Image: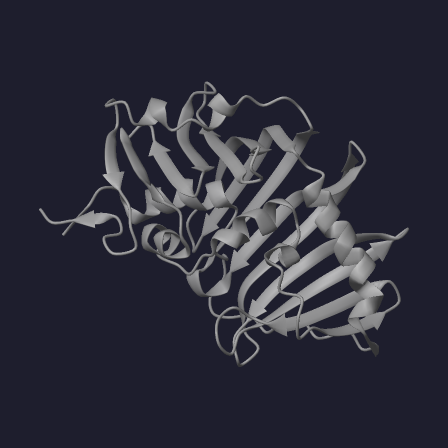
Length: 291
């Protein structure tokens, strides 16, 4: 078997592109203790869940031209990448996303585009592009870890509830803090979501996924909330995955909402015109091919 790109190189570009990464220390971590407080009904946090959803619904476009992504994997030195992000809802309500990794002279090193359920990952220096239908299985094939398509939007909008899973919630309250526990996507997994409410504005500050023994599989931390065009959103996201021993920190310093973004920004054509070697991706073949 021959791999088109080294796993390290592919992960460096890929993890930064989708805001998902691995943590920098060995072994697993015990989950944060649940807040000791009163158990409350979902009706108490329902207005806050509606507010989180409204922030997504009201965001027709999102653009950031100043985004720094720091990736730490195992004992290796951390690598910092500068990136740009464009997000737009299309006329039929689908989400379009482009994230671009920049070189020293603002030249693109890697470009990821999501549109019409199709996914393109172009690695410019390697002259290769991965292209195909976007599914959870494809993400697992490319990056070698368990990823979900829904995690991408959830991380960008700091809202774990975008996938609509609000059944079987167990909610504990202490002061202005809520801890929401729900079953995970995978069997015997649990999700623990920390919700902080200040001046009637909810902020998701932590989203943890644990196994049946309570050890952390993935942790997302949302921080540095600022209001942009009337919408509160985080400007710092840190995601850790202890088992793979890597962490990713994303800091955004220039976020623009409701700005005009042309549909051509999400066009696959420039990367499929013959200049790059196009590698079809699917859940069955992944990133390898026979020699």
